[in-house]
Length: 302
Image (cartoon, rainbow, N blue to C red; front, side, top):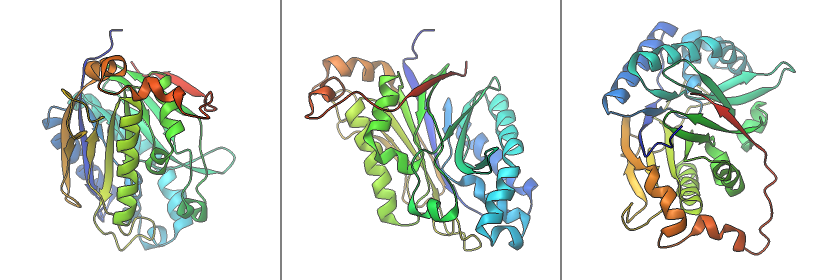
């Protein structure tokens, strides 16, 4: 397959609401996907823990208890993904589904995001490094790290905190990733800027495009996603002819909106050997640089 030259991507600044029913939640998602597809994007990116919004529809006995939230929202995962699969086919787009809890056979919960294609293929990336809140909540580290080979490019997913660890991104890009998707959920402005800084640094280090999609707005009904701060961003290395700032697009802080940009994947590949700087190629020159420990699994979603 010929490597795609352009990636048209829209990142959601998705507002956590309080749907009264699962039908109301589904209608909201359908409207958001329709609006995102109308930007002309081939890929729509939803944020980390957007799936927790479904708990509101299940009543206070569910959404008021963190453990029960995990259990019940995990039970909805298959149906939730099916909704996005149908919308991806309807609008002819790839969708990174807002992440949520998934339960393993051994009883462990992980934080999982699903990438769906217009042809109905589904890939799953689990979060690899847990935040203190996730440790306290009972969410555990997943595995492995994937690169998804799709018709629109090779995509890796680093869920929120994962984006702050450079060796994860490096392993994905060495395995062929053209873009790194960074769904996020942060309750403070400092948290948003940590993830934003990570996303921008990973773009610089690896000469790729990174896409951050955050939850926004307050949801006082939920102890899990009660406060949400952020802005979506689409980032590349600052390089002449690609972007002087490294920012292809950024949203208005805490607004509910889509943020769209077109990333020139072909130009980014060329920059690795012909750019002003050669960060990707010069990585091994760092003192102490060693072969990477992380195994990356290539998953075809064609």
